[in-house]
Length: 333
Length: 181
Image 1 (cartoon, rainbow over the protein chains, first blue to last red):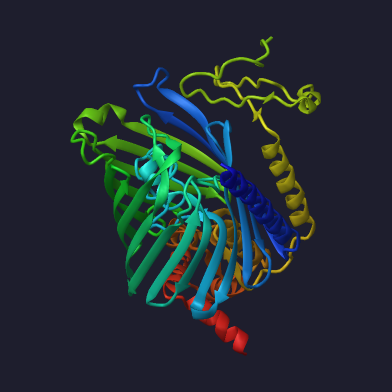
Image 2: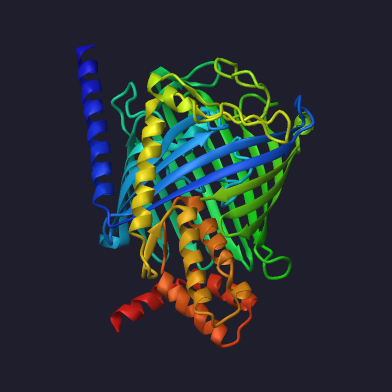
């Protein structure tokens, strides 16, 4: 009990120290680049009480600072769900151009798993898919954020990284175990094709019956992924297959996504994005899989203004009613 | 005309709402100046803003001060090298390159405007999805675009060429060559 209290105080001090260091870094930064993004969308789903709906989906505040030629810091603060939910998303310090063409990141950052946003590239209109970060599925939260230290070496042919993290998700530096979590990522490039593997091993807090993460009783967590990305003409194709064990809960998923630039032969600044995703939240339950196909178009109206149109189709028979059409306007300040 | 929305439950479904509420008495002063409800032409579209704790306000103020700092000390010239993992910042730098060329009035502004969008999309596709910071070389990119327009290349050709150069890491090589001179 006494030991726990001591640990908590130490964690608090560590947190204050980290914040002070980050703020000091910003104060002394040479070039500070603040930016704001606001996303407003309209969507149609015939199953909702009001089929045609509007939403101020997300507002993001960024602060990117070049402290020196070789070091930088970033703070990202996000407000979601009509600005009701808000949190500090990322806060880290990076030292670039270290030996072996490597960089070191310290703070709260996204885990270097395959492709962070499996849907697309620049802000999809729907992020609520099973494999996407920020979903309710705790086993896939590993893709989300942690507090720790990450070292990565980037070469022409091989890129690899190793990280040590602690905590239990966003803004939660302490967990109820003394175990540290380990993250690994390696990618090999063959010209315009990249193939990689990623892995995670550690202890997280257990999961409640409603799917939320408990604050007690740690469980063993393991994850492994296989990823690939290729550039073919005007298209960028990416895929990833993942398996996760969160205590006794086993889940799996994969996706294939293609972004195609239509600028050169249709309308300037228009591009298409297609995704097929398969997700099984619990491999022991036979009827919970979802297969989703999404087709989107993204048009840059002018600098700072983007229009997006997206169709989301659920291919599983019992989920087909959940098909949706989204139209989104994004404004960057 | 409209009843106050303080204490009202959040609307159900997916109505767009921004609520202005405060649990901190120090904010009550500001309530007089900010309308609690802004009814729009869309009927039941209500805007409510929530400040339910001090931290978000502090962070917004913090960002505001830094924005002011950024505006006051904005650089006039294109930077040589930029590291970023934020698409908005990437967008700003690429827009600055286009503006620099447009202001020279040598080429048609409509042709130059948004010429770097495919390059931006490619960088976002490849780097930002995998959480890697992008390194761009604004001066080099600007020089390449200007030279290509002078050679009479079409906008589509330049767009394609910028993406190819990024794939082959040619901007970095040109930057290194410039520095060696």
